[in-house]
Length: 145
Image (cartoon, rainbow, N blue to C red):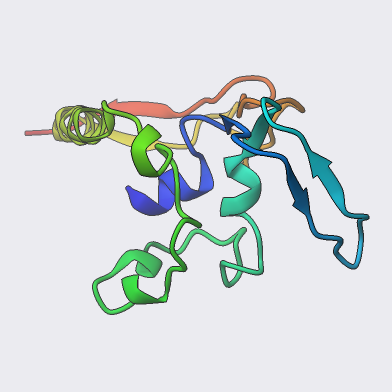
């Protein structure tokens, strides 16, 4: 579940209000930026989750990243599907339980398989939210009990 949320966070961006005048230092590809108090910043969660500076092979689905043996390798504040700190989503635990319960219920009665319309890898529409181009399609077959 954690790797799915890293690759496809439920909210593609988060926002914060700058509390004091700040200068973001220049990098090799950009000039220094002055951010004044009161400025609203939109921070791309998906950009952070797919940054090769923090994730080895970020485009690869690798649930092993979140095993007990590997969790210590995750840099703090680089995995934030529900936000972080005092503004973290208060529904995070409920959402995770709801997702797991839904999947158990679904998989107990059906087998999932690609359909004729399934696109792999998934391609997304440009924009702030992760919306699959042409929709997200999968096939369901009743499971024999």
